[in-house]
Image (cartoon, rainbow, N blue to C red; front, side, top):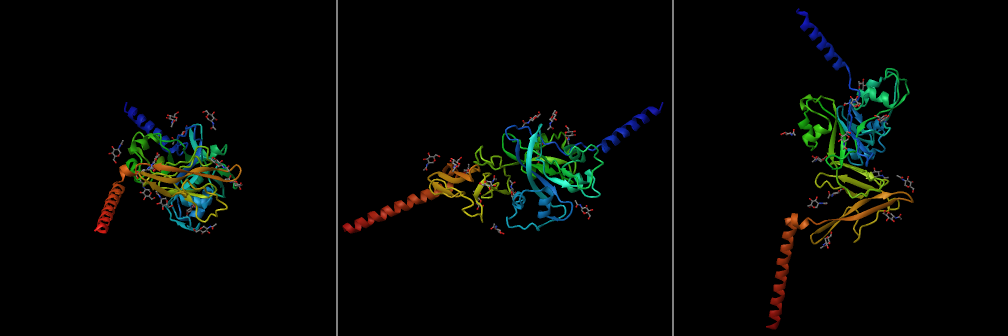
Amino acid sequence: MSSGPRIVVALVAVVVAALAVAAPASAANFTCNHTAVAECGGVIGYVAANATTYGAVRSLFQVSTLAALLGANDLPPSTPAAAPVAAGGVVRVPFPCACSNGTGRSNRTPTYTSKNGDTLDAIARNVFGGFVTYEEIADANQIPNPNVISVGDKLWIPLPCSCDPVGGEAVVHLGYSVPHGSTVEGIAEEFGVDNATLMEINGIADPSKLQAEQILDVPLRACSSSIRSNSLDSNLRLANGSYVLTANGCIFCSCSSSSYQLNCSIAQNKSSSECDVPKCPGNLFLGSTSSSGCNVTTCAYNGYTNATGLNISVNPVTNQTKCSSNAGSLERGLRGSIWRAFLTSIHIALIGICFV
Ligand SMILES: *[C@@H]1O[C@H](CO)[C@@H](O)[C@H](O)[C@H]1NC(C)=O
Ligand SMILES: *[C@@H]1O[C@H](CO)[C@@H](O)[C@H](O)[C@H]1NC(C)=O
Ligand SMILES: *[C@@H]1O[C@H](CO)[C@@H](O)[C@H](O)[C@H]1NC(C)=O
Ligand SMILES: *[C@@H]1O[C@H](CO)[C@@H](O)[C@H](O)[C@H]1NC(C)=O
Ligand SMILES: *[C@@H]1O[C@H](CO)[C@@H](O)[C@H](O)[C@H]1NC(C)=O
Ligand SMILES: *[C@@H]1O[C@H](CO)[C@@H](O)[C@H](O)[C@H]1NC(C)=O
Ligand SMILES: *[C@@H]1O[C@H](CO)[C@@H](O)[C@H](O)[C@H]1NC(C)=O
Ligand SMILES: *[C@@H]1O[C@H](CO)[C@@H](O)[C@H](O)[C@H]1NC(C)=O
Ligand SMILES: *[C@@H]1O[C@H](CO)[C@@H](O)[C@H](O)[C@H]1NC(C)=O
Ligand SMILES: *[C@@H]1O[C@H](CO)[C@@H](O)[C@H](O)[C@H]1NC(C)=O
Ligand SMILES: *[C@@H]1O[C@H](CO)[C@@H](O)[C@H](O)[C@H]1NC(C)=O
Ligand SMILES: *[C@@H]1O[C@H](CO)[C@@H](O)[C@H](O)[C@H]1NC(C)=O
């Protein structure tokens, strides 16, 4: 009668083995069911397995321009394609994201051409850093038997992404591969995300079960902008520490955590004939500010269209908080009135002297 417990032990062992062997069908499911914004910019934090260059990362992921890759990483626009990425270095890779059936995936990009000796699993894990699984590549490319691929097959790699706002705020969803030894709290702190939000959005019930190389959806707060909804770049979202060139490369926009306001100016080394950027009323250039009393007015980027030629628009945005929140200007105002009072008294004194 002692065989009972032994059978249970054997069964448990079988179940545990089955769990360990069964790879998850997908690397991550980023919820993306916001119907208003079905396409946007996705980004992953790609961990380079070997030493590489920004140019090589750009071609692996087919990022539209080198500037787009540099901007996602806040590197100077003059950085050459040959700039090195160390082994283990993290490169933020931007790509077009499309939502369908409640999940976001890269929009039929990047594609990878299989080489001699490749397996789908090696492509998923080693080349694309585990942001997809072999099942997802097989599924996306309608490969009936994942063990059989041919040299030269052009495979679409469906990367996880999302366009959903979080807590009513626009965010940039970063696909993040959990480094060894990190915790949910540590990741939340590093990216300035509430840890409850991070757990909820990733369906993490028990933070102690976080695994290295697990793919997380990290919602980064985006800068707010005044880009209108009918602009061709209405879905432009930038997180702190990144920039983009938009409106056919005519406009340079950056996002900094100092204000979380999109900060746009005319792109350098674009000729004025290529880029007709209007000014705001009062001859204010895009990106510059003027003050009047308590108001600070910034000439902000408002979007572009390209139906009958490039049409870029700007609009003045007024911030009236200068007096209430800026003691410095109040003090300057006060000093100004003291100075005026002083001048007036000199005048009176001079008039007095004339009379004498
Ligand atoms: C994602 O969703 C699919 C299908 O709904 C499921 O099979 C898979 O396990 C999920 N992956 C994760 C990491 O939750
Ligand atoms: C998306 O759909 C899921 C399930 O249908 C739901 O739980 C979730 O709240 C939805 N998210 C948003 C942002 O609408
Ligand atoms: C733009 O400026 C960069 C230096 O910042 C320079 O390398 C590049 O050649 C310039 N491009 C054009 C089109 O003038
Ligand atoms: C969306 O989901 C439905 C039912 O779950 C399925 O029939 C359909 O094929 C899916 N569409 C795509 C594009 O995956
Ligand atoms: C990284 O380098 C190793 C050793 O040279 C090589 O086997 C592997 O294929 C490389 N990985 C990638 C993604 O290039
Ligand atoms: C978030 O992390 C902090 C420690 O960094 C902890 O005190 C707090 O309880 C955590 N919040 C939640 C909701 O888990
Ligand atoms: C914003 O980005 C800069 C540079 O990338 C970084 O030093 C800073 O810590 C970030 N701030 C926040 C709040 O994330
Ligand atoms: C906007 O960006 C420019 C550089 O492109 C910088 O000099 C300026 O201080 C920024 N303004 C704000 C309000 O962040
Ligand atoms: C400040 O802005 C408000 C509206 O934004 C305007 O009504 C007011 O006249 C402005 N004041 C000054 C001193 O420009
Ligand atoms: C904008 O229009 C010009 C011609 O008017 C065209 O050459 C260019 O490719 C268009 N750009 C976009 C992004 O549609
Ligand atoms: C450019 O766009 C603005 C704003 O949509 C519009 O008012 C203006 O008429 C357009 N100009 C041209 C030349 O199409
Ligand atoms: C207005 O100015 C205050 C203080 O300078 C700043 O904190 C706030 O972000 C500004 N708001 C906008 C919309 O620029």
